[in-house]
Length: 309
Ligand SMILES: [Zn+2]
Image (tube, rainbow, N blue to C red):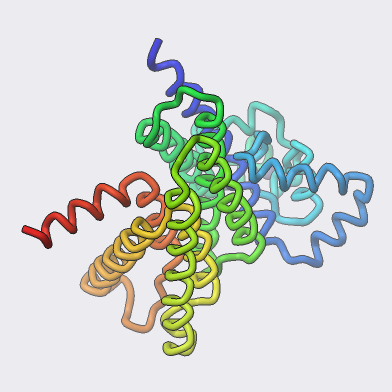
């Protein structure tokens, strides 16, 4: 039954993905609409706070439908969703990740208005990232701290995907998401310590990576007068450095710069983007750090091996 854990992790990933969708949308909604919704449902406030914490834990909610106003967004966090076009409350059979969208052929069951393909795509990406994390997990999953560390990493993975989706759509990394990532990164250092990692691995390396990347990006930010780097990128590399450690931070930045340059050149060559068009850098950084968590050390030793020969 060695495939059974993969099925469990994959289903968790689909659920995490539908929570990512809901969180991205809720974060995007203007603050004024939140306030209106909060006042209208003042008694739900404690539950909303729990909902935000659940986000950090990878999400226990299964609601992931798009909502267009604050009121339905508040209901997302209570586990209920409504169609943004017709306002019809969605049931369980409308909210099954990927399958509902396929079954309904991308349309609302009640008003037949189209639902963005972003929803099932994000769910599939999250499930894939969960499965790869489980497959690539660098240490043996034998003790309970190592399972907690894996679960924590899956929560971080959900936040990373949410930030990437947000930056791709709206060209900004929201501070609220950056804070969640930073807190998760700090706690993950403690979890790494509990799994018995040596001091330089769980504390000194990550601090060096975070500080070094932060100073480098802050320099780019100041010298480039915010044209090269956004403030969100500067904050992101600090949290990313804490997550992966010093050497892997260098690998992460290398992956981000090389892949962004390659894609930028490719898009310009195919004339899909002009020189002045903006390509958000956040998704490249997020992908670089996420991959470096698993492959930072092997890539670094492969590269130094090349230099020494
Ligand atoms: Zn509808």
